[in-house]
Image (cartoon, each protein chain N blue to C red):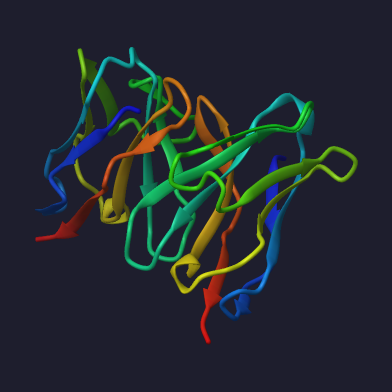
Amino acid sequence: DIQMTQSPSTLSASVGDRVTITCRASQGLGHWLAWYQQKPGKAPKLLIYKASVLQNGVPSRFSGNWSGTEFTLTISSLQPDDFATYYCQEYDNYPWTFGQGTKVEIK
Amino acid sequence: EVQLEQSGAEVKKPGESLRISCKTSGYTFTKYWIGWVRQMPGKGLEWMGIVFPRDSDARYSPSFQGQVIISADKSTATAYLQWTSLKASDTAMYYCARPSDGADFWGQGTLVIVSS
């Protein structure tokens, strides 16, 4: 099974900051990776799939990139609505695995 | 409009059985996998398993194999997550989700509390 190592676990940032979250896979999975945003008490929301494709309706300040087994989610200019927890998830072959999550907090 | 509507919160005792549901609408149920994700209090997300409603092909993550049963009813476009004997450690929020390219639609979650 593929293991996903997500970092950092917590990130303190200010409105307007550029932030980057990283997930590293234990083995190659091509571009079969998704990113989600979750707010307290709510279901996760899909932001990006196939490592870099923006889900419909997601603001363009979110972007995804990948190289080999390293995947990144970048928020180009952090907005108040973006303070949340973010998860990566690989979906190469079942069983699928989430990263441990990154909580983006207000600095 | 695609919707996944989950059944309500449950409070159960250890050893009891439980089935929670996820009623879908707005898409062809038999064309997509549907699955369940666990979130224990204050913790991250875990895929438990998925089922393909057309033929009831079910796949489980190793941690959940033998612990739960995932099924789907084509006639009502509803997915189910079932326990035969609950443990206190099953206390969690459970989400159903439709995995496509990533899970693009989610239910609102069902809170299950297991306590004596």
